[in-house]
Each structure stands twice: as C-alpha cells, then as structure tokens.
Amino acid sequence: MPVTDVNKDLDALTMTITAEFDASAERVWEMWSDPRQLERWWGPPSHPATFVEHDLSPGGRSAYFMTGPEGQKYHGWWRIEEVEPPKRLRFEDGFADDEGKPNDEMPTTIATVMIAAAGGATKMSIESKFGSREGMEQVLEMGMEQGMVEALGQIDALLAGAKA
Amino acid sequence: MVVSSKEERDDEKAADLLFGALADPTRRDILRRAREGRLSVSALARKYPISLAAVQKHVAVLERAELVSKHRVGRESIVRAEADALKRAHAALDRLASEWRGRIERIDLILDEDKGDS
Image (cartoon, rainbow over all chains, first blue to last red; front, side, top):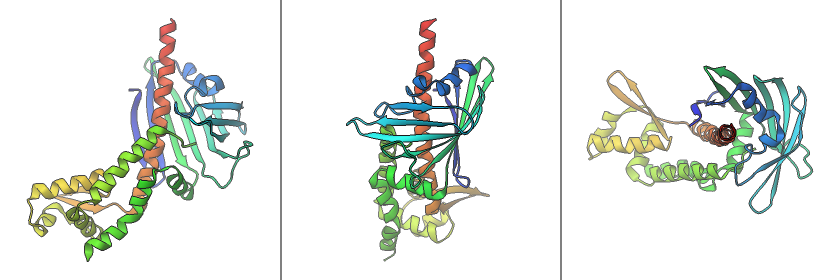
C-alpha cells in the first residue's frame, strides 16, 4: 500500500494524504505534467478522464472531462496557482459546463502537491481542501449516497422520538 | 471533481453504519443523553438495566458511525456527541480521502509498470 498516512483537520476542512512511491521524484512529477499519464489515473476506472488542455504554469489552466459508463460527460478545470517542478504544485479544481466553461455555482477544491526524495523512494503528500464550507456542504449533498444525507437529516427527528 | 464508484461504496458503508447505529432504542437514548451533556460510560450504565459491557458495546457502535466520540478524563471514559457540523466535515473529508486514495493507488500501478520494462 503506497498510502502511509491520512490526516483530517476538521477546523480547516483540510485532508492531507501521504504516499511513498518506489520511483524518482522526476518520474512522479511526470504523472502530473504529462497529460497522457495524468489521464490514466485522475478519474476512477468507471469515469476515465481526458485532458484537452494542460498548461502547468502559474496562472495556467487545464480542461478535462470524465466519461461515465453510459457515456455521460462531466467537465472540469484546473487553475494553476503554483508550480515548481518536480517538487510542488498547487491548483484549484472545479466543475465546468458542457462547453468546458467553469461553473461558478459549483464547489471547488484546492490541492497542494508536494513531492520529495525520501531515502531511495519518493514521498508525495497532497493537501486537499474545500474552497469554502458551502462548497463542502454542496459536495456532500450532490455526491453522497442519498441514504447518508437522509440519515444525517433524520437524526434530530429520531432523537426527538426517543425522548417521548 | 468528485465522481467515483469506490466512494459510493464507502458512502453506502457509512450510511449502513449510521442507520444501524440509530436502529436501536437504547443507542438512540444514549445519543440523546450524550447530546444533552457529557456523560461517563459508567454513569450511562447505571441508567439502563443492562451490563456495563453491553453499554460499552452500544457506545462503540455509535462511535463507529461517528455519532459520538470517547475521551479519557482521569479514570473515566467520557462520551460526547459529535456535533452535526463536525460529522458532516468528517464525511466530506473522508470523501476527499477516498478519492485521493484511489488516485494514489492508480499512480502506484502505473509506476509499477516501469519496473516490468527494465
């Protein structure tokens, strides 16, 4: 298992995941910089990604879409904030409409990737956070299995019942 | 972008835990009391006609569903209800974690192919 640590900061709404790979830092960086390699892992197997634009420079943009099992397309974008090959990358990731235009009403996440040599291997840590608390709530509402959202909403009602 | 079948499975598991935890009247009562204030496990046990071990089991189920958390204060084990906002933050961050975990595993598989080539 490459993942060595997962850390959640509930106040800052930040999740940090750390992994170790048996490869050089330069090779790990290629996973991010080469769109053909990036699209092999960005989307889950059920929703492979296709990058149609990929400009890893400060202020640069990427545009991609993921294709679902029934052919439905989900468009997304990155806005590159910081790049320092092969060590550091920071970008915002959001949703776009069918033409690939960023959808401002949808939540975004911000990822900071750090890559460093660690005794013959390479350590990569990714700090991922929600653009805002509202964005986090939105992700929960749209992405979560409906049962989970309902259960969370029903707790108060259930407990009121328990009291009677 | 958050689209993944593995996450859906994780969410389903989380929903099962949540529904399972809330399905039992004693556990709902424990959660209600914990929400009204902090309670030690031993104080809780005195309120029900069941053994301390049985109460501990109920608390563990609530803990797994992230509805309560347990903290040690001296020799006492204190049960605290997780606030809704906190629970939601947990769930949302778990979602990010499972999404990135999948990506990292896929990167690792691609890097493994390099070794086959050499």
